Length: 31
Image 1 (tube, rainbow, N blue to C red):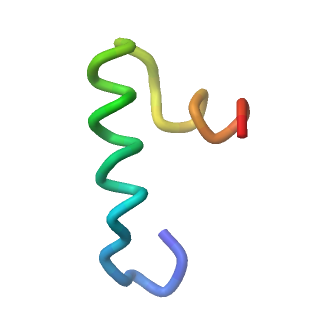
Image 2: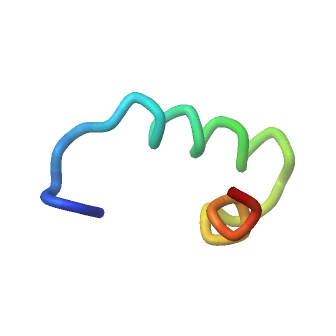
C-alpha cells in the first residue's frame, strides 16, 4: 500500500479480516 512501509494497523486489519472472514477492501470501506 502507500509508500510500501510496514504499518502495524495494516497488519491488524489483516488479522481482523481473517477473523471476520472478509476482504481487506471490505474493512477499509467500513472505515
